[in-house]
Image 1 (cartoon, rainbow, N blue to C red):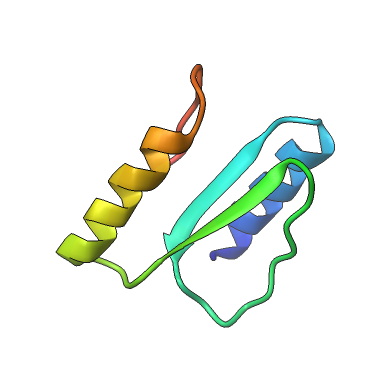
Image 2: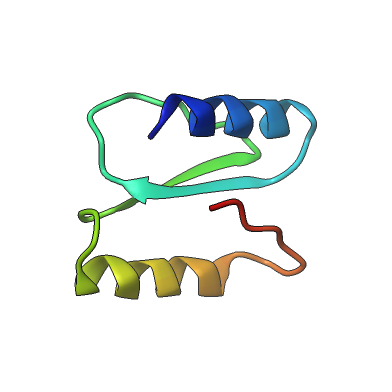
Length: 68
């Protein structure tokens, strides 16, 4: 997960927002908390990642905001 993404996710988590980070798998540790959920993708740009992304987004409750 990129540094900016980690900072944004941590900031939103502190404000009590529910945060779902969806990113390619990395060895970097980023702890989950009550409102922060990490969803690793199998790789960067494959069909399996797109399918996994679809599954994850289907489970995230509405309304939602996406940051790309």
